[in-house]
Every structure is written in C-alpha cells, then in structure tokens.
Image (tube, rainbow, N blue to C red):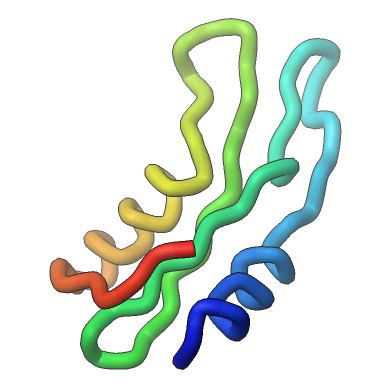
Length: 75
C-alpha cells in the first residue's frame, strides 16, 4: 500500500463534530500501516482539560489493543 492510499484511509476517518460546549472530536485523523498489512485509524479528541488526545495516539492505541507492535508506515 502506498502513501496516497494510506492518506485516503486516514482522510476517510475524518468526522468532525462538537461533543460538548468546549469539546470537539474527529477533526484530525491518522492511519498506521503495519507490517502484516493491517491499517489502524484514529481521530483526535480536543478538550479544554487533559482528557483529549491526538489522532496518532488513538491509532497507536488501536494497534496495540489488537496486539500489533510493528508499524510499516504512518499517515
């Protein structure tokens, strides 16, 4: 899988929404391609406190949750 296809997968995960008065989610997305060909996606959650996280962290968490640890490429 090339960078453009991985980029399209990340872009497809975008789903911006306001989840509360000052909190937003889904305005940034990331995709990680692992050595086994699996793609893990994640989106950001922006909050006025420390509860939010970036899209890259969400994608990595999904990857680790699925017991994967070797990435091949990120977008």
